[in-house]
Length: 254
Ligand code: G3P
Ligand code: MG
Image (tube, rainbow, N blue to C red; front, side, top):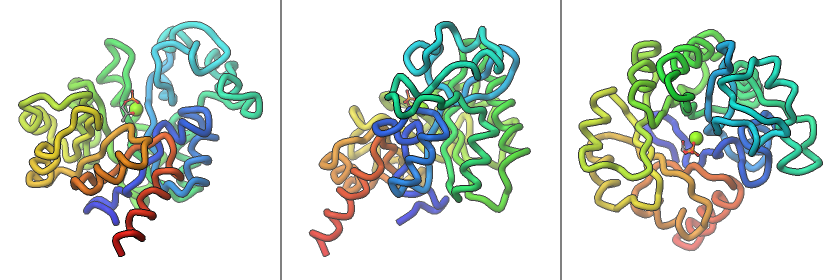
């Protein structure tokens, strides 16, 4: 079951964050192994302007290095190990460039939700660089990606750089005027956190023609409930677990 954009029901979060180091090529491969056809990942810029997959402002949590991503060149970042903190068997994994991730997803025949996760002050620049990489390295024949962000300036720049690519409005909690805010940037999809999401908000989004992509859904019962409420896609750390949960509920209701 897919939305009109062919966004799948299950999207691996930061690759497959529960079972492989987040925002790495290994994580993208792991998501594919777990049956996910799309992944979500976070994109930031290095000090010398390269788009890389990275969630945090600093490298401490996910690599063996120290410091701010925005103060490191790509060459400096590439010396770090982005796997070993997750587990010794992942040692040697690098922080990937967006270009490398695009190549791998093309090879694996996957699609993606690119979250623009800018360092402060680099909102528009991050969107521009990321979308230039997508334009140069992602064929129009492949699945149309969704470009999302929490940051209004990033969404505005995304619209300017790639008006034809659907934009996703990200929110921890949907504000009362979420539909107005989405319309400001012509966002097609809405990406709320599941915690504060209500059934009425889902219904309103669907009535407005906006596919709903919810994060981060890691509990089978919650996944089943959200799908029953009309959510289109579940962004999850554990794609295999959530896919199995949805299969079970379909089998039970058949
Ligand atoms: O894009 C959904 C989700 O990734 C947003 O939160 O902090 O995991 O990037 P975060
Ligand atoms: Mg994210």
